[in-house]
Each structure stands twice: as C-alpha cells, then as structure tokens.
Amino acid sequence: MCDIAKQIRDLDPWRQNINLGNGIWTRGSPGPSARGFNCVKILKAIPNDLTGKRVLDLGCNAGYFSFVCRNRGAEVVGLDISQRCITQAKFCRKVKSIRHQEIEFEVASIYDARKFGTFDLVLFIGLLYHLTDLDRAFKEVKAVCKETLILETAVYKELWEYKAPLILVAEGLPGKSGYRHPNKAALLHLLKKGGFVKPVKVIFESGRYGCVARK
Image (cartoon, rainbow, N blue to C red):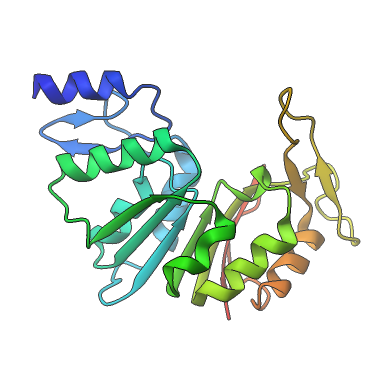
C-alpha cells in the first residue's frame, strides 16, 4: 500500500479523483472527479447497464469515466493525447487488477478515433473546447458512434442564446492555440454535422453544457 501511495505521488498532478480501493484515492481523499457537481449529473446520464456495449472515452485523462463504464459492463477504449494521463490510467488499471481487454488506454487524439473501430456509446467530456478543428472532430465522432453521444463542454456563455452559430476563440497559452467556446446554435450545428438529432436530453446548461444525443 505504501508503494502504491508513492507511485500516486510520483504521477502527480492528478486532475481526476479515482478510487483505487482500500481507502486509496488518486487525489488523497474520497470525492467525485474534478468536475464536481456536473460529474454527478454525467454519471446519472450514463446507462447503468452497459453489458455487451463498446464505449469510447475521448480525452479520457486518467480514466475516471472509463472505469465507471467498465464497472457497468462495457468494453472500453480510452484515448488521450497526453502520455502522462495515459500512464496514470494504466497505473489505475493495474492497481484495480483490470485486464487490458476490458479497458484499452492509448495515446491518441480524437482525429485518430476511427482506428479503434465503432462504438455504441461515445463520451466527449471536457474536450471539445480544447480542439482547433471542430468540424473534423464531429466527422470523426460520426464515423465511430453507432448510437449515443454524451457531450460536456465549456460554452460561450455571454451569447449562449444568440440565434446564429458563434464560437468564441479564447486566448491560449503562449505557443498554444486558444480554446473554442461554442454557443447553443453552434453546438446544435456541430451535433447535426455529426449525424445526431437535437439532443434528446440536456443534462445541464448553466456555465457549462452537457447533453445526451442519439443518431
């Protein structure tokens, strides 16, 4: 147990709080993932029974939602462009004694998603606003998602209800591109481009936006 605690410290910082069992959490104490209250709402939106389903967790970070879906019966693929995040996810998988065949973690971007096949459920959580080519991202999601998409993102709050599609490009860090914050019209346009009908369920719409959409 001491060795596990040391490895957790060696892998700091952790953006997601994952229960590794025996009272050990990646961020030191019990609690939801870093997304707080919105995280609880997303968990309720994910089907309780995913037996026989394939799930793709885009921008999986340390695998919080990947582990949730595996515990609900799914075969999961988690992708993230950060090697550190994937190393964290694989560490958690090992501590939890989960087989590679149950959850596959790979360093890859959303634009590589179709290399991993098709999926019944795609989680697109906390990622969209980091991307530079939103049209291409939704084309990729269209290619891999057979049924259901759960989307969560930061949004253009000031012009959220404006009727025309608008995307706020916020200033990024030096040497990096800025964040893309869409308003509602832009999000609906992107979802339609991805082959999804109008969201069948809005999870939350205050500050950030979360929804369930189906083909």
